[in-house]
Image 1 (cartoon, one colour):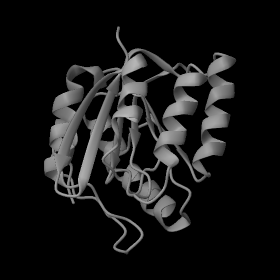
Image 2: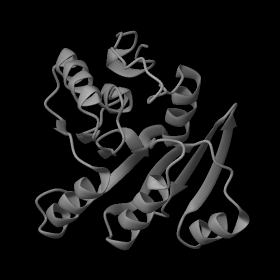
Image 3: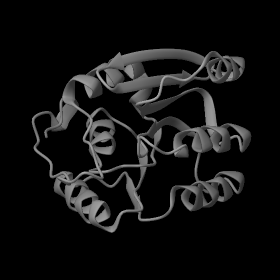
Image 4: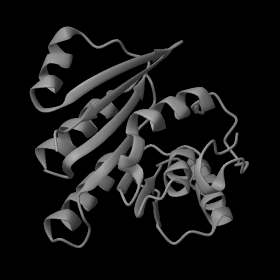
Length: 190
């Protein structure tokens, strides 16, 4: 796998080869970053289920200001640290926590103004879980995302109209389909 845009374009990164992870293809990543556009520049980013850290590096490559990268898998955490160290950027804070614990920790820091609200959030949880839905609810209800922010949620689920309708109460929703992958881009109005 390699970085597809920005100053690290073409840089190869390590990834876990297992049944537990599925790296996001370059085609899907390119589409996601086209949707995000200029919002990534100077953004405060959360990559909650980071896997190899490729979304974190893509964000840094395009000028993100700060990035919190997390994965609870120890093997993934080691790969992430190696990948992030290879680009020698100071914008990363890397964690090896359960996603909910990381959200609680970040919420406390946001409330005490130790860190800013997130402008871009990447959610790529295990496909058979409801972790993405839980994370979206937590982020929104705890006011952890800034106005004009975007949450990018990759899953294999086609959500019903009730869930999409609930999201549309708060967010502008774009849905893209790529084979088994579904990418939901939920953006708050500015």
